[in-house]
Image 1 (cartoon, rainbow, N blue to C red):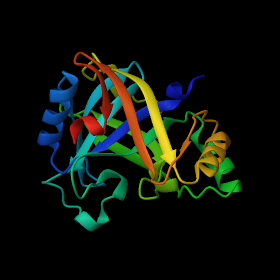
Image 2 (cartoon, rainbow, N blue to C red):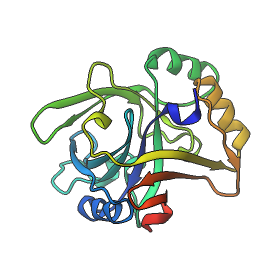
Image 3 (spheres, helix red, strand yellow):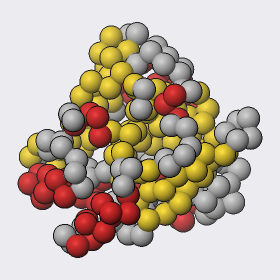
Length: 214
């Protein structure tokens, strides 16, 4: 399994969902589709397929949410322009992997349940590691299991493909050790600042996120 096979979705945080959707459409040539709202987190999103089981999530504060801004998970917020703030890895055996991570000292927080209301009223439900806990500055992914819910990439607008995920961290070896414990094969480059970026094949050619939308 290659590193990209582990990627469930990438998280691009933006201050305003509509503006973020327009930015992605402009640089990628495909308009993301409105996904829905996360009532527990006070956020809303739009998604763009990057393959049959992978997608880009554009996420922003939900202006109609009752959740105070200071109670939204930091992974889903941005104080400035668009930025790639995190990523999710596929984890169909979430309970076992979570236990192994805790035993090795990985602090993922508790397993959470999430849900999102689709525009047609249907509900998506999933389990994930606590989104309020950022591990290694978000370079280590959150882990997610969709259970019986259909994967969002199946019905998301198509036309783009993830071709490379670049992870950088000052403690690259520590991140790779945690990834290995989680069964995720992904290289991490050494660098002075933690960062996540991705290259996408799109109708507009190969683009790099987040640089392409800043």
